[in-house]
Image (cartoon, rainbow, N blue to C red; front, side):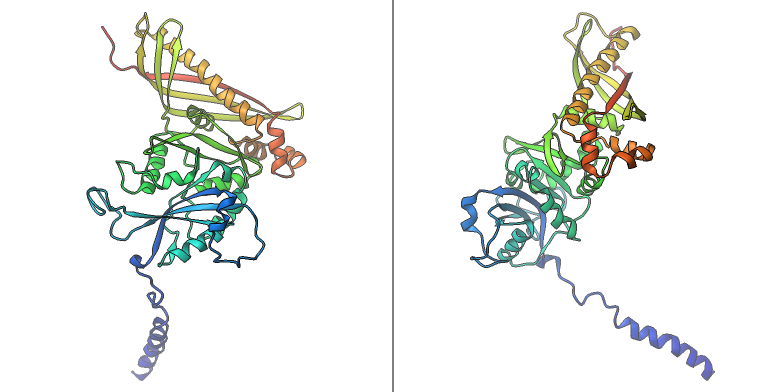
Amino acid sequence: MNKLLRKIGSVLLPAAVISLFLAGCWDQVEIEDRALVLGLSIDTAPPEKAAEEEQVTHLKNTEMPKEMISITAQIAVPGRVPLGPGSGGSQDGKISPVWVVTVLGHSLDDAMNNLQQQIADPRYLVHLRVIVISQDIARGRMDDLDDYLRRNPEVRRRTWLLVSEGRASQFMDVKPPLQRVPTLYVLSMMEKAVTSGKFPPDYIGTYWSADSKWGQSAYLPYVALRNKENILINGLAYFSQGKMINTTQPLEIGAFMAVEGMDPGGYSTLFKTKELGMVMTKINERYTKARSFIRDGKPVLSFDINFEGDLDEHYNGKKPADSTARLHEIEREFERNAKGVIGRLIRQTQKDHADIFGMGEIIRAHHPEYWRQHIHNKSDWEELYGSITVDFNLTLHLRRVGLKKT
């Protein structure tokens, strides 16, 4: 009996001692005592603003770079952020559920330290969901920005990084009627754009992944503000050599997703046919097959792109779209127009040496020997991408035409 008790004691005593060191609440911080940053905007600051900087991380006479940035943080106010329809915040809209603070800094981390100096609670980025940067930042300071965000473990890889048409700080002050928290509205808009096939799931982690690949160039959503409340997804902002080089048109987002074979389809196209007048078609599904070759010492890529869609509208035409032959005419005219849009987009990215399609990754995967001989860094492929041959074929099949006259 004594031997059994000693065995039980030898097991329970260490467990009891270890449990004293497993307490998880010794360093807890209540959520009401945290400054939860929901959104950030980053702009360049004019030189005359340098006098307004608070010297938090350095002394006034310390030599610093002349370039400065301005960040605007959207911080959640405890008890005011709505948790559902009609909850939280003020019903008359006079009390904002967020606190908007603007600070200056020489770098992003410098500005974040200046921000911390102006707010009482410790700042947390675990709920940061949207970062908006201006074109000036995207065209010149992406390496500095990426360095801080990658090192910070609080920044989620599913955070949205957007490039704005004008100043990024405008997006921290929008007041959309559908949502009292501007950042949550932008987040909802981007997530629903992915669900409806209007935009690829290009989170900040996806952007970093593409930027680190030798055979692909990165891209980000390009957004614009309309009437102080409406946010427009205005195209893709794409990069070469680590800097934003150009932007696309909104319809070219659909062309990019077609080459990539991304589902679901979500873009409608308005065009004119020879016999039937104006028609509108909507793409529901896309399927793309890519093939690659090495011809005369250079890569050649071929894409077979297949669409399935609906005939949404037919107007201003002399003949009705009521026969198989006339539907085929619409399909052929769509294929001709879509081929022009996709061809222009590919040629423009080749001119800009920005392989947003990841064609280099196809060559690297299927022709490793060629890749090892000719590609020694990312700039080698970006230069070669401008001269490769890209062929593609398109096919549209209209499945639904709606009601028709009998």
